[in-house]
Length: 325
Image 1 (cartoon, helix red, strand yellow):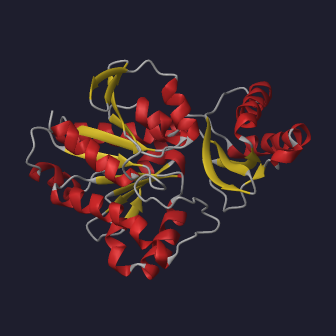
Image 2: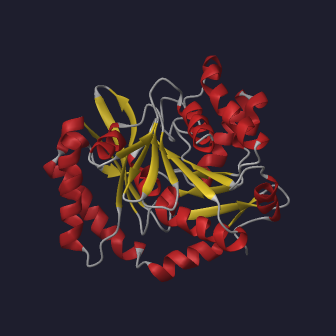
């Protein structure tokens, strides 16, 4: 099955700019700003409607310019459709916010493609690609992860290190924990060291901020065969082979977005109000200014948004600014 629908390609052909563009965007607090991310308990309130209007404006901007929208999320397809159902029941007039062309989910371990019937179908070729490229054997890794939890609970009892109580995913093992900001790096380092001494082949560990409560931050930590960057590159290569040169933008706000922002053939947009783990990572880079808010890093271009805009507004501003160069 082709990863690109005829509708997707027609959007690219009809764009009236020198080089057509595609947007890959993280979902929570990037494309849709909710301020509180907790998939276990969606906190959507009617009185918060104004927070979602920039997302609607960004979607309209993309539609008017026929720029395909590809969502790249830590959520899996089940979680995003559940959120869509809850969101559209509260805000039916904002339902087009969930109208995107491709969904990359579970931190880059699944790809869903919208077909001509306006329904999503999973890309089995991508699953085959992951399974043939990476050695991620969940049945063998899971007992090691059980030992990891016992070890972390002894070493960091206040962190309550545990499995996420969600449905099982074949290509992702997810943990969560509570931690103060200064202790987080120490805990993640300990997890890395545990896996290095326990399994032969290293797998990415992806940290992302979830939410805050009772004075502590809750974090997700995902053990995966690959991150968002591999899925984004898989789609970009499909676009290039099917269509030719395209300007690809990636947008994100958290640690699990780092790989797609800085390790793909794209212009990375670090949106406003990004999480500390992404902000701190950006500070370690030797960025060279190109022009206002645009920087170069190892032959790559990125956009660092000011915090005066909402995340969705900063994505639109970055795209508009790029084509006004």
